[in-house]
Image (cartoon, one colour):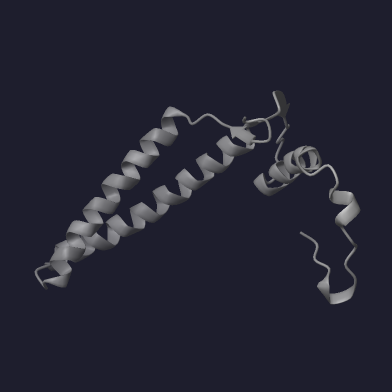
Length: 127
């Protein structure tokens, strides 16, 4: 039933959970200040707080993104009951996933080689 499904499992850390909570809190705070700003009821101090909160949300979002990318890089794939552990060792996430897909796609599409043709000139892309 799920024989041809490709899985990628990864673990989030408590730090990631904390970053999600902080980002949500910061975004809610910014939204509250923005409502006041739309009603032109924002004092000078509150304008400063809004700018600081938006900056903080951006900083947290970058940290969260990096934490998620790291978690994904350290993940494990599973296909047809076989576990595929790929060593990230500083590789970009795209390279880790490409390596995994290169292992499992031929199993999904056993006759892919027969239907594929090489591209020439401007139509060829290096992905």
